[in-house]
Length: 403
Image (cartoon, rainbow, N blue to C red):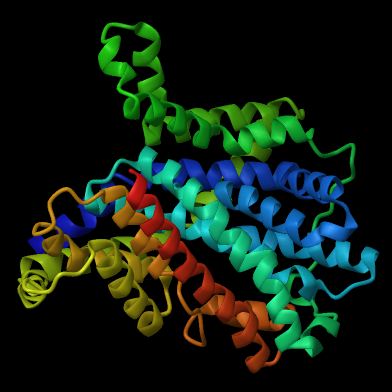
């Protein structure tokens, strides 16, 4: 029981506040219409001929602020409305949209996987964020708009289907006057990313050591702490997405309360994963596996990716697979000194997103919303998650050469 308590507490201790502030920030953006504003503005900017590129960028930006399932439920009605107006199947935007969301989910804090894994490995969350952006952008471009062209050739019938979102019920649609402006919406969504990125860049350039007594740098480092960055961004969102739009306190508290209630199950799953991870370590399973691979010269990035990928295929949940991977990989990392822990975090996240299939709830959500057959879902959603995972690993290995 001591092992379970330490594993559960150690995992939730450094991420509970980040999750809490993050999910409330995302709900404020959604309830104010800011996420819809970001998506529609980018769609207008790219134009009808480049809808795929507009969707993948908008889903990535929205995906940074919203957890995967929330972003999916929020964006699907928007792309269905756009497809109706453009007189095309919503399937044209399925792969690009889900690619942007899943890359944000697997690579970027404050999403569960990368946030938890960074804490378990002892990696700097700011570096995970910056490296995640550098490797994530080429990953979602290849696994989104580019792969979509391949999917059209393999399953042309899927791109004629109308799909249905009736199971989502009546969706709130914001008028142009009700939505906040694009600038303030984008700033609110990206503020935590900006705060953490600036503080990390200063640290990476060693400016904090060059000017040790600078009050400004002390403040920037303080604001760049992941928990503080999420708190400041949440308070900023309360004003920009609430008070400024003349919402009363009860409305804001209802939004925040429902958001917090929605992650209760997720926190228990993550806590359970942390406990399982600690059992693997304390029971010696991790050490035993490390001894098995002691004489094998394998790149720790590839090793972390492979373990996470295997667990993902078996378990279905990307978050559980990622956390469980930490318990097996941490003992192995002891034999690989000098390994970049931020990149190991990203490799684990990339591996945990591979080949979403029938044991993953998202597989069935995509199938039902877009009216696909099981085969078509495998050749679109499952294929996209696999390509995204492999391309993510290749991008991470490439970045490892230069840092």
